[in-house]
Length: 189
Image (cartoon, rainbow, N blue to C red; front, side):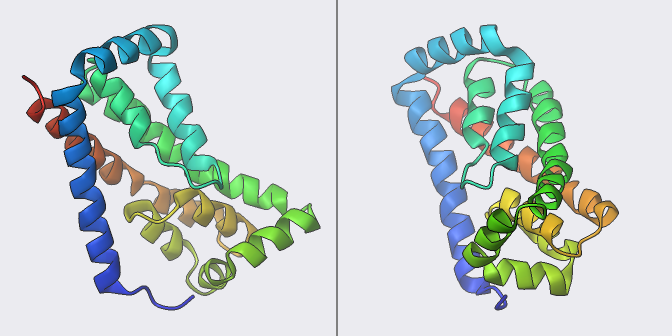
């Protein structure tokens, strides 16, 4: 894998974080009542278990999904941010070992293995060369975490270092949750 273009990654990160804050603020300002009502209705049915499963699914899926809408559901439903953080950070950390295990299972399917290797050849090479460091980078930056964990499972990355790298999802989840809470609060009438 080529070394990442640091300037481009920083710009992409800053723009993405600014947009996340702005969208949370604008939705809080313009659509607070219907979003709160819908989120509360959904949250009353799914609760913390729904937040947990939502994050686990999005952070384990090799499709390009993000768990911020799940966090936003909890925020806009009025759940305590500390409870949201505890549940969703746990799910996001657990997604690392689950994704790694999916990658190990994918080794049994030549078709799936070849598809992943063809789709993400630089990531496969990077995982082979840098091990869990690639997962750590994906855990913190706006890089698909699930892809890195699946490919780590396909490569030579060991389980223990993968689990350690997955712990970096805690500060990332906390930071994104903080942005959502700040934006939602700033959009309050």
